[in-house]
Length: 291
Image (cartoon, rainbow, N blue to C red):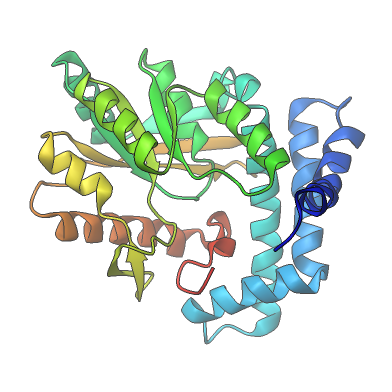
């Protein structure tokens, strides 16, 4: 069991490289800072063995026929994408104002507006793909606001910055757990919109195929949609134009049936997005493995 002081030192040490990268480039324009952090993260994925090996272990499950050298290049591209995503989340207040970067399409946006007009809540489901905060940016551009559910980071420095960033993108921001669940239900019953990332391993979940491999998956979003008769809308912010813009697609609401069927439909939807742009998904989640 680590002492509190040792944990604090470790948290500082692990956060220091990211803090340094952000500080060194803080005088540059927004997009240049984003690219710089992306380059730094891509370099880490390419040359830092623990990160490279962790990525390869996960990607090999899906791309077993791909040469290891090609998977390494894929990991580097993923690092560049995720570095930019992290920077944008840290600076979400500014990111949300860059309306020229966002293009939206899909029937789910009209369904979202219709639910809001009827005084009903809605559940947006997505994953750690592309720039998921672009989805909430587009929702805000259309005069609405989406709260979100998040899993607090163990490192208090990351947790503080991430929470501040996503709170700038919309409220309420609800932590996973019993208290957060209560707030989530109240928000939805009051006609609010909530965005949930459903691609993390959930130990109490059900094994449902994800990218062709069974993965423990939460049924909570579908259960809430059924219980309160709410639309469950898959939405994705895919990077386009060399990563400088976002195509935000709101798919049609998943038809109500049962929670497993609906969650499987979402897994299939996200899997298709990932297979089309594998470098845009965060493969480091240990989606199928142990924590």
